[in-house]
Amino acid sequence: MTQQMHLGAFLFNLGNHIAGWRMPGVPTEGLMEFEFYRNLAETAERGKFDLIFHSDGLGINDSYDTVLRHTVAIRPEPLTLLSALSVVTKRVGLAATISTSYNEPYHIARKLGMLDFLSHGRAALNLVTSSTDQEAQNFGQIRHLSHAARYERAREFVDILKLLWDSWEDGAVMFDKESGRVADPARIHAIDFRGKYLSVRGPLNIPRPPQGHPIIIQAGVSADGQDFAAHVADIVFSVERSLASAQSFYAAAQKRVVAAGRRKDAMKIMPGPLPIIGRTQAEADAKDRALQDLVPESLAVSYLSDIVQHDLTHYPIDGPLPDLPASNGEMGRRQMILDEANVAGTTIRSLAVKMVQNRGHLRIVGTAVKIADFMEDWFKKGACDGFNILAPFHPGALEEFVDEVVPELQHRGLFRKDYQGITLRDHLGLPRCNDRNRT
Image 1 (spheres, one colour):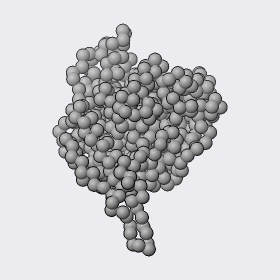
Image 2 (cartoon, one colour; image 1 turned 180 degrees about the horizontal axis):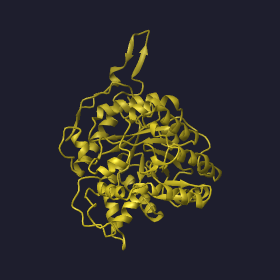
Image 3 (cartoon, helix red, strand yellow; image 1 turned 135 degrees about the vertical axis):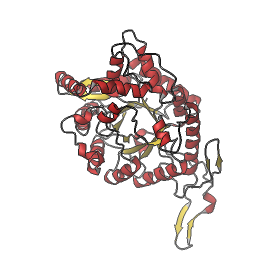
């Protein structure tokens, strides 16, 4: 593990708690306003975070009116937003969710390459395979690809991204005014990729990005997702909720990375805790209760139904989770719920409450010292390389973390007091990617 932890800020709309948008001081009118996101990005940079991560989806899950009525379904387009934020930030990394199922790799290689240039080497992409039929139907398909097929396509997608980013060698651009030479054709390469799902000739029409390859993030929980991450990811956003499970996940991830032919420290593991901070434990507990009191009971059950892709609203809420039919949606989180459902006494109500509190992540309620204690314990005991912080509401909860928890971590020598480099790879301690075509 690294000597100091890495920190990301998960910018999920108005907050990562499902009812965070209802908290006092949350500017709901800011959801589509640049200044709202500028404030969040500048707060994260003030806190010396490695990166901000803008979540995204390509459809609206409208299977349940209750979910659509009570949750924020608006998803600002991330690459447009992050390109704007690249101008007003200097160091913090800029990560966007990208679907490998409903994008073309040439488009994404070009857009992420340009973001890397605009930000001077701070671009990252969180690769997802998408999980809903609603998304499929927005792109001319009736049903989503099978789980295995989604990951097969994703592997081809990443192979093409890397080939395209390398299609211009370092030094291919010349702009020699005396000779009139703009570029060296011998250093520009078509990729001629022909796969099962994708076909791209190349080369890209922009030079090789500052980082070589922008940082690749993966958050898949399923076996396919974890194997995919071992081969391609620089960062993994994990969903572990106990020290023991996080330690097991971390050790297994390192073994998979080595088996994939990479160094075990080539991939950073960053679980996503949701911190609820108070000046005292009583204040933090009160804030936690206030958030939960804002969640309608009907929303919790409908939200759980949406995740498991089976209508639970007609079952006894204090009864057990019923046997679920097979699903082609998000496998990892669904399996996590099934595993919890096997614990004696677990009910639909208890599962639903857990999911709406933190979307399956670990919730930490307490003072800044308590939260820093938790982070130090996991970091020092081989459970992670850092954390992707899920502030429950924006901007206040992220500001609290930066103002109260970050100084505590810095005091303990666990987190940087200032940036030492410029690129996101610098922050993560990862080298610039080699140019495979360099002559």
